[in-house]
Length: 442
Image 1 (cartoon, rainbow, N blue to C red):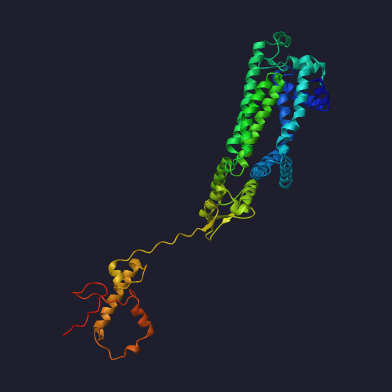
Image 2 (cartoon, helix red, strand yellow):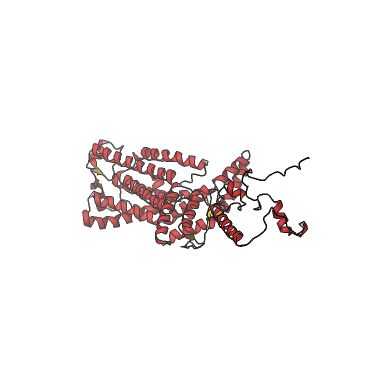
């Protein structure tokens, strides 16, 4: 432990100085020797460190999503070079370089706050042993030893004996109850954070070994926190519990406002965004415009939830633009099917109604339906009125014109069955075309 403490000496003094500054502020409110003053100083230290690590957290999110996107390609490389581990490693590094990501980027926040964690552990361990560390002098050391959080001294551990706990002015029962509750809360918050990531913010369309690893870590990390937690002082448990709660809240915000494509969180986000855009007719936030812009840029590579969002805007008379804005659309835009193929939003062509037998015999045009029947009745009435006013030879009377004098169009019309040249069946005759009678033999 002395080797680790000497290695993190460069960070021990700044950490102790920050704690003392916060203790000065909270000590003026709650009293310098109270657990609230020292406990809130540790909480404030955590918040300050996590605010400084926000850029690394954003980089972690981008790296994790890039790794999820590369999982199918990584699986292909593993299957192609499964017998050549060296070539497999080379192709993996080449893939990481082309994508601009690194597997270690997802561990940056944890690695970055590790020095602060060990420095705080060394400071609290010095308080328990009565050693002055950094800017903590003898007066501040006595004040920290008197501080109790819910009856447990700041430097007490779950594994401490009764004599050591009595020297810190507490009972072993209070120490073990408080530390046990804090360890359970610390492990539960870690489990909930990892479970939230696996159930809501993972692309469910791609099944990769990466998902299985994350699922395994969901159960491994809480157990590790529970095992190592019994050797942490109460002040370190406060630090780690505050870190887990901050991570959980930060992750909830990211999942709600910037979810992973293809995840359940993205489906819920796009539903909320569609309601907002359809109600207001525009995209108001810059983050929303960025997401709409990314969806439009994907084209046919959109997933199921993104196609549903674009189709919903189309049905609402809106159109997403390449710059991320949404405008009113007067024309019928293309609607994407389930497989991503664009189809027009115009209604499908309907089959014409089937004609009745009398309509087919009267020569009505195909597909005219009831309109054809009404038009036929009008034609019949007009032809009947014209026949009464003018005397014309019927079709049975011989005409003086030669057969070749008929127009060619009339011949073609007469040759086509059902072209409108059929005459109505006379009384006593069967309906439909009649066979010519054979000449009688006398």
